[in-house]
Amino acid sequence: MQNIFKNSFPFSKTAAEHLKELDIDIRTLPIDFPTSFKEAYKRVQDLIENNVIPEKVDTSLTSQEILIYAIMRVFIEILNEDLLRNRFAEAYSKRTETLLLTKDSKTIMKLASKTFNWELLEEEYESTRKYEWKLRFNYFLEVAPSLMANDWKLINQELHNGWISLTKEKVIRLLAEKTKSYVLRRKISREEIPKLPAIYDSYLEDLNLKIGALKKRFEAQRVYSDEVMKSAYPPCINSVLKKAEKGENLTHTERLFLTFFLLNIGHPVSEVVDVFKNQPDFKEDMTRYQVEFAAGKRGSGTKYTSFGCPKLISYGVCKRELDPWCAIGKVFNKKPFKNPLSYYRAKIFIIQREKERENEQS
Image (cartoon, rainbow, N blue to C red; front, side, top):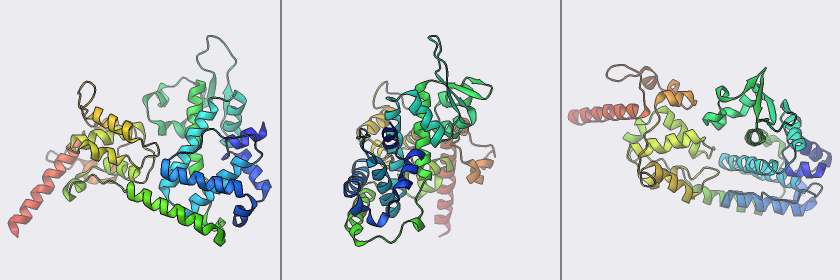
């Protein structure tokens, strides 16, 4: 059972303790563990080219998955690409969710308490009970805000004496989200990686070529038709765009906001789809369908309008503190903006007027 847990969750503290006992030498990994080394290399390739890792693995082998995970980390830290780090964390988050749905409550409890130090309790079984688990609210707040949807807001939870009641599915979703942030934070520092022998060279050269091809294919799509449009974007849009370009996984609200805004100011569907190409879970057909739906080209034909500032503030997407012009509402009547579209249109007008004056003076 210990082997199954460690290999199912190779990022866990239990797995880390086992890895420490193995006392491995990074420099001789290709020789000491050739099977694990080649499998790790193959998985990093798959992560770069197809954005996947295997969901089903043989968890009975003593150290196989733990070694593969550790070697993948070495490759990823040497390659030093945030896009790849985000994909790696997202992939293990998804695999954790898939695996936990098939596991018993002891496994859920072990991951939550031993690796994440969460106070999580299983409720006694009752046929009429709606919730099977309860979690201390501070641990809920560690990850729930990143999920963003209304049903994850604290105000919408059943809270009693500091404990939040949850279904098994919600506990697992929270653990999956925690896995993502946990994996992202636990980097191997550059100082910990010794000078690697020549045996690594061909593997790293190949992975670097694949990373280069990925970056070329998914080169950040700025979606600015000209410099005027770029300089008129409100800070909230610029912030979400930067996250998208870096391959950070956008929340559902951020994706909708970006889609609606870009469509509202006239960008074609194809350009909006391109914005999401760096997303860890990007699927072009599905993204295109969703953007076309938002543009009114599918379904009822309804065209959706960008979220207003109050909603963006409530979801933590507003970035008005980054732009005094936005925060103070420096437009004709000096009132704060109520919608990012108002900011954009006002700024476009002012920029164009300034350009006209420059042309008149020249």
